[in-house]
Length: 329
Ligand code: GRE
Ligand code: ZN
Image (cartoon, rainbow, N blue to C red):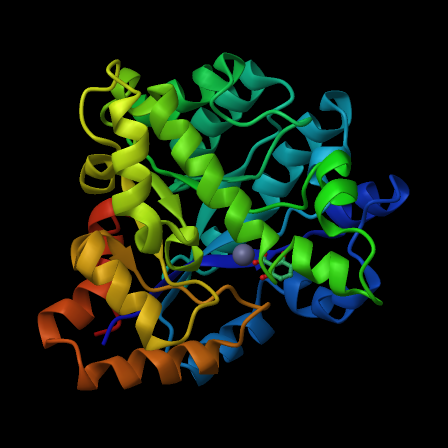
């Protein structure tokens, strides 16, 4: 079955250089990922083939990107996107691209998104956590989302390490590296990205831009589990919104399975938001493609064939407007 994954990361040498110089590069715990992240060719494709993944939508693993100033990050994003475009051009049936955008200069970021979509054929953008401590509901970022809406491409909100004040308040004082891991994939990332998504909804972003499509990973960043309560509590205090908070998960938000490989959270997401809003993803190389494949195959026992193919590729084909000519069958 044609299989597409949407939260699959890379880095470039230029990105590693800039973030290392700045002192915020990849933490030592993740250094062993670098060779896989740098590979936009044969090694990556072999790892996809091993797990029968047809197409990866590639995005920057943006650890340290937010620490760069606009003057550094804006041209760097352009270089990164040009390198990514090279890879998608070389392997058009195996790779697609999400643009990296330097949000500290929002109008340049909007222009870069337009360049990436119109010139490079990218299928959206991936943004990472807060920007200089600001959530994306801040009005200064609106031009970027207007561009995405106008271009008809989705925005994928990925977690990033928390601001320093949050690190100190929530994640200090634990043994060894546990504070760091708790602040990222051990919990903090998902709590923050769920919060961030609810902020975007209650800010009215999707009322201003009703056609804007948004993607979050990690089986919905905890939201499906909490949605009835959050929607009940928030919607009552939000008469400015066009619809209840939960309804935005039928009109604007999509969820990927990245990094989650067990049945209970998928069942919850299917029950709450429905299969049509769910897209299979791995989170390579932070998760192994083979683990993703094993999981997807295991779902054949509980999902109908149409639901499984919607999850594996159908919903992604529709959302990203992918050409079926890319299909290997
Ligand atoms: C990710 O991008 O999803 C990621 C990292 C670093 C550690 C774990 C992880 O960037 O899942
Ligand atoms: Zn990721």
